[in-house]
Every structure is written in C-alpha cells, then in structure tokens.
Length: 102
Image (cartoon, rainbow, N blue to C red; front, side, top):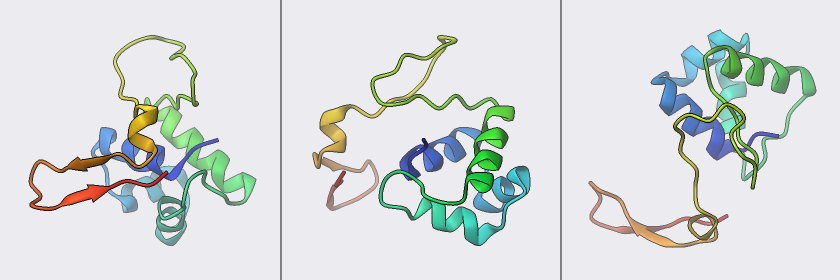
C-alpha cells in the first residue's frame, strides 16, 4: 500500500512534477492528481497502482510501510507517528501555523 503523502514525498525526492510521474508510470496526469489528493491510502484500480509503484521502484524509490525497516538500509525520511496525528508545526517560510491531520 502507498499513501498520498508517500507519493508526494517520493515525487519530491525525485525532483519531478506530476506530469513527469504520469509519463514514467504510463498514467494520466488527472490520475496522479486524484491519487495525491487521497485522504490516506491511495485507492484505485490495481493496474494503475502497480504501474505507479513499478515506476517509483525503477526510479529508485523504496516505499517503507508503517513500522517497517528499510530492506537495503541507506538514507531516508520517515514521518514520526506523533507528527502524523495532528501535531502543529510552523513551516519555514510561512507566517501561519499549520495543523496536519492524519
């Protein structure tokens, strides 16, 4: 399973936009947009999800599940459970405080 947050983070790590990800995964831009707009776990047809995960894997992205350990080690980024539960934080360039909901 992949969450919308993981998808956005993966795209950011690769430094690509939604159009580039759509091309890499042979999906449409609106499909990528719908996936990224999901509340939590991305829902969609199995073929589309497999194309997406395959494209991310081919690009070097390892999806790490909740509580799982990275298989190959290496550097990575993971959101702490407390941050995902609605913790308030201040963005570096923002003047307002944002609350993230799980």
